[in-house]
Length: 336
Image (cartoon, rainbow, N blue to C red; front, side, top):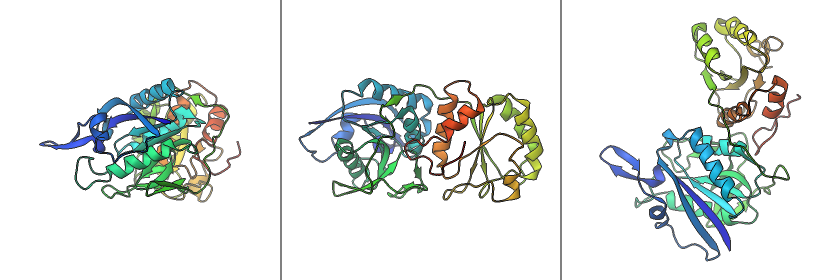
C-alpha cells in the first residue's frame, strides 16, 4: 500500500464559473470525485490548505505547505499539491529550497480548465501526478503537467491557455507520463543523505526589470528597502550607461553582504553570460554580484529569498549557497 497525501490550494482546477469569472470554490472531496478509479494499492488522504486563485499565493502559503509536509513526512510515501497554474512554478521552486534532498516525491499539478468541465485537462494531470507520486522510484520536487515531469526549479508557464502550458527551461524533462505509465529519461537521485527542511524566506527581494532608457532615480528607494536585487537585464546581461555609476555607487554604500545583486536575463532560454559584452564585463571588479547563468527566473527568485531568510551572512557564504546545485537548478560550475 502506497500512502499519498494530497494538498489542495485552489486554482483553476478547483474553480467554477460565477458572474465574476472563474473562482476556486470546489474542495478536496469534490475534486477527487471526478477522478477515474485508482489502483487499490494507493491510499489517499487530503488536506485543504487554502482555496486561492494562485495570483494570491505568496511565501506564507509556501511556508504553510512546507510545515504540513514536514509534519507528515514519515506518514506518507508521496505528496501531491493541487495548485493554480499562474504561480505554480514559483511554488515548485520555493519548495525545492525549503525541502531539500527529499527521497519522497512532492508533485505540483493543476489544470488550464476546471475539473468539473466536460472538456478538461484536470483529470489527466491529477491522475498522472498520483501515479508518479505513488511510484517507489520517484523522488524530489517536480511539476507534472500535460504528461511532462519537470524538475521543480526548471518549470515555467510558457503558454497562457494551451494544455501544454509548462516547459522545462534549459534542462530536459525528468520523465513523461504515457497512458498511466512513467517513462523515465534518467534516474531520480537525492542530492544528499538526509532530507533538510527550512521554515523561512525573506520578502526583501526586488526584481529590477531593465527597459530602454531606464533612469537612476528609481534606484535609491529600491536599495533602501530591499536586501536582494535581481536585475533582469537584456540579452546575455549588462547594465546600461544611464544607471551604471549610480547603481555601483549605491552597492558600495552598504556593508558587504547586506545588498545582494543577482544578474540574470529577460530571455527565457540559454541564460546569461556577462563576460560576453563590455556592458556586462565592466561590472567585474566594480561590485560584488552573482550571476544566474542558466537558472530559471523563478528559481533565482525563490533561491535568493531562501538564502536571505537564513539571516545575515558574508557575501562569500551567500555566493557558496547560491551556486550550490539544488534539484537541478544550475548546470554551470561557477568557481567560487
